Length: 85
Image (cartoon, rainbow, N blue to C red; front, side, top):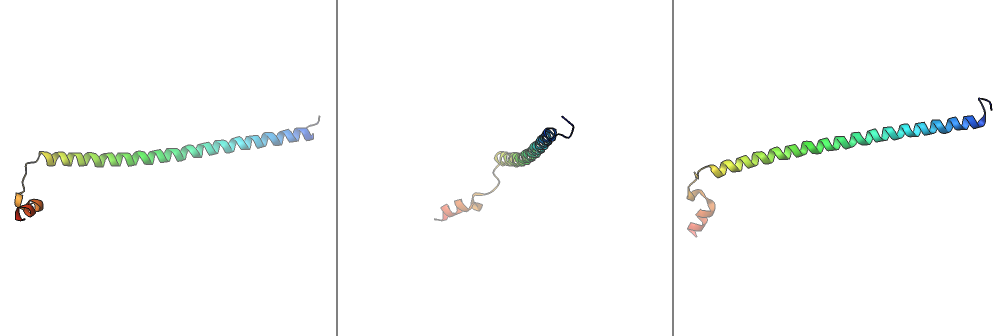
């Protein structure tokens, strides 16, 4: 068989196509991984935002619970409505 035989050329084309296919698969996997990581990072950031908001809200509610009652009953609209009715 000579170097330019049809069988050798066909084998070379198949090998090249296989290598291109593998290369495309690697690129697709890398792209998929990058997209997944980006989504996970965004979700993590959202989760941290929600967590911070809830922690602030809990502290606010605890502070309100521990605060002595400062408003008079007449300034409470529900109490004022009930007493005048």
